[in-house]
Length: 421
Ligand SMILES: *Cc1c(COP(=O)(O)O)cnc(C)c1O
Image (cartoon, rainbow, N blue to C red):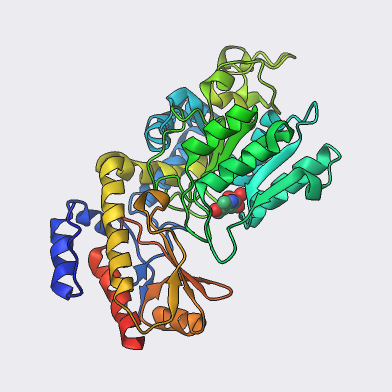
């Protein structure tokens, strides 16, 4: 990959010309600003609608209209096995076996379901370790989980904070904290990528350290799914959950994803909160007592597949399948490196890139902390048709999603900052 950058517009255009995926931008709808497409750097919050979505949703409307109850077997994508075709693509994106992945519910619901399976405090092992400043929904989930077992969250939740004066965590500090918690530690539950700092954690090292002390390793991959390379199976991660409406472009509130390592997923005795959709298909419609779990991650499915909520994701995953995920990640690294390079040329603006500089410790997001002019800069971006988000006290998160962002988009962002430099 070409990483020889400079600050000319010609370079941006050359990089776009060299980009074999550049055409995918045409596959998406962009919000309009003064009659033109915006530049969209918020794919880390809500991915764009791809042009195949309407047809995918229409297909289900037609099948419902034409077949009603018979659609469970006669629909083009039979509703009875609706989740199945998603598994091969998701398995590639998450780095796991097809039998280890499913889609269902929403992210936080899945977090509760999998904590129900994996958080079983016993013999003085009751603590859960998280990164400080985890996404609020995750904090609420863990807080209420530990309370269910009668623990005070202040005792049961260990939060790992950055060193004084720093904004991201050192892997060695996380591992030291895991070792220190030792046999009191029941579970490590980290974000894969912290939504605020953009830091990608070393999931492999964290998992190994958790296992060494006898704890479970689970991850919230909301900001990692469809964004960075993952090897959940090989890393021996116990469980993971994510949403599909960020980098995966599944649409607002789209279905959540869940991963359970096969050593638990294949065992129907693994505890869980069950429903009929997780029951073995052979016996499901006998309507008898006695749950028989499917011997794979679908054994955690509870309710009937939410077809309408999954259809848009099907259209989006087609694009991930076509482009090839490794290629997408390569472009992403180049695009983010280019953004970083340009930002570093702005010597007079007072800001700090809080996302790690190491390309292996981040995905397609740089979080910029403007000590003074954050709000002003955010407004200026929106006024110029560039969608970025703003978080107090002055953080602008810029996520050039490689599926539909170009080098020229990044260059335009830079030019606006430069005009304020
Ligand atoms: C986006 C996000 C969520 C949102 O959870 P939902 O249940 O899908 O609303 C939760 N956790 C993290 C880390 C996120 O980034």
